[in-house]
Length: 350
Ligand code: SF4
Image (tube, rainbow, N blue to C red; front, side, top):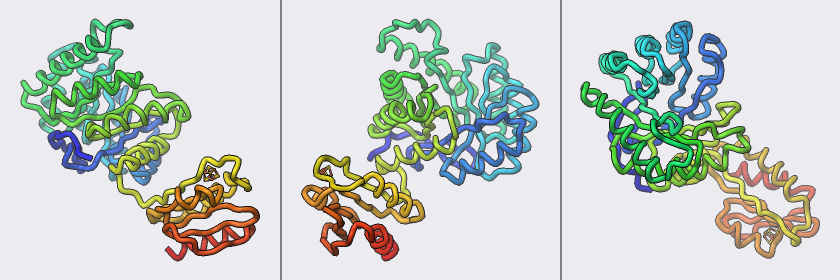
């Protein structure tokens, strides 16, 4: 898939832009002053595949804690700034690789200039984020085209402020909690500017409610080559945010993973077993596998073999037994009670 060309921006050791892999981001859910728990969560996020992790720094105590956390983790950190130029400067001096700022939240122009100069001196990256909710003159019923033109002119105005002070280590983001508006506004921003784009859907909800809208919004944009960093916002464990982001990217072949893939047919009246329970047991076997193999569990020998023809190993259920296929070729018929052990052996052979 061809990525839309964007310039490279460095956030510490992480490079963001179309020449580099898409960076998965997440955010720590604890108060930043709780250093030990933050460090533990950051390490868990890094182990799961996050490239950048953001922390909130609403008070001077938080930026002091941020400085300690920076020293204890290996992953570059992003400070999330709202309203306060002092917090931004403290976070940069504390070792933030990037800060996330909505310049509209900093009322005094001189404060914005101070932040830019400090970011420039420390050679850090800055994400200029605008949320739909913070756009001036935007009403509930403002039509889409008008909405997007307001967002673009607001973004253009912010970018001018940074460029006029000689700062262009920028990443852009435009966020909405609405899927269509997220897609349309990001397409418009991507067409207008060549700074890297961070994608996300704000306030997406609990995991079970967030996965579909986030996948549709971000998947649509990524398929069009738009997006250099992504975050899946869910109310819950942030490691899950990273896992979902990896799945979205992997489904578009934008992320290389050693995770095996389990294909299970949806079952119908032809299936003679409790296929779901069997598939769950196969999934447990695959949780221990660190190789990108494809395993299929199919409910019958009518459609199963054809639909699983490209699987490394497939099991097709029949009355009291299952047929094992390898790369589409029938290898053996095994009694249902011995099938899981037989599959385990075949997985081990691979
Ligand atoms: S593979 Fe067989 S059991 Fe499964 S959905 Fe298709 S026809 Fe039905």
